[in-house]
Amino acid sequence: MTEDRLALRRRYPTAQDLRRRARRVLPRFAFEYMDGGAGADTGIARNWAAFDDVQLVPRYARVIEPPAAGTELFGRAYAAPIGIAPIGGPGTVLPGAETYMAKAAQAARVPYTLGALSGIDVERAAELAPDVLWFQLYRFWRNDHEIGFDLARRAADAGAQALVLTVDTPIRTTRPREVKSGISNPFRLTARLRLQALSSPRWLAALLQNGIPRFVSLAPYIGGNPGFAETASFVEREFGGAFTWEEIARYRDKWKKPLVLKGVLHPDDAERAVSLGLDGIFVSNHGGRQIDALPPPIDLLPAIAARVGGRATIIVDSGVRSGVDVARGIALGADAAFAGKAFLWSLGALGASGPGHLIELFAADLRATLGQLGCANLEELRSVAVRHDRAVAIGDGREAGGRG
Image (cartoon, rainbow, N blue to C red; front, side, top):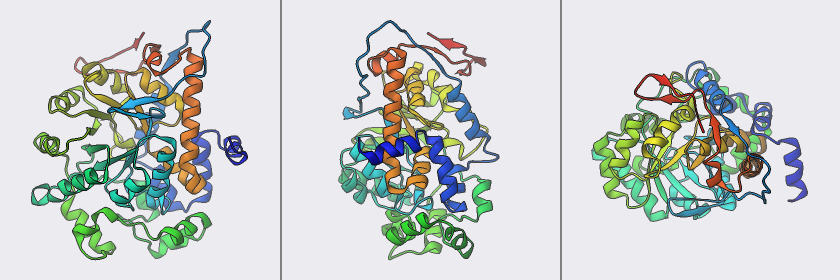
């Protein structure tokens, strides 16, 4: 490890350290965009608390070599069961965000999920992350899904390894911290935001290097070089609603690679997805950014894993802040854990080097957790005893007390 990387590990050894620095160095609007959620942020707080309440029981008196954290998802090898979740408009936090995350994921050999509403298109992302790229898609429903199907085609042609259909955003809800900071959707650098940006040399430098964030993937469907007004009108007109099961089945017919459904919290929905031939389930509540009344995904994970585990790859997100959280997810039945907000913190704190630093933190923390629990690999982690008092047993109204 280089001296610079060691210095970063000493100064910012956790994702929360990155969050604190990001708050200091970013414009107010950028921090509020990445850090806030729906309502009063109670959903975000609940996601964090739920992970913190999962307790893992170690077995000692074993000689453990340095634990192996490598894994396989959808038949492809990755360095760790860690991934970057899809994030809409991350360039608001730092212009060029998608480029930095794609490069970091490729270097670390972990999945990077490019959001449809991003500042680089899927073709460019595939150049930056050819071995680890996944593509996320919202519901573009007009003209019989012409745009959505074409975006999926472009992703397949570019070499994306998986397509992620997001169902947990049927409508856009209010995020009070964004509203109060002056953010519009799509992002527009108003006079008010320009004043805030003057306080952040890091953000201004990224803006000069990468330009104002735009939804580049949508430009071919809007026509020409669309401005903010044209893009906003297009998104409002073409985008919205949750995919129906019939629509999901049509994407299954067209997409020949692994297909994942993101935003699943009910075991019956997981079962329905698997019955349609989907390959993976993202157990997620959109990070608490859509509605703050939803249960934490980690609390629904055991019920979903019990229902479809072994028949589908299960990924958990919403509240992942450490390698310990990744270990908690895997112990409760997930195959991998993805983070979104924490990667935005890393960008805000450290710029281009942030995502790579965070991946290193997560991976080192995960390996240390495996060793501390007496696990030589991820498979052994799946059999550790777990106390999970918050686990929800869907269907009978009870709280499941624990496992192991």
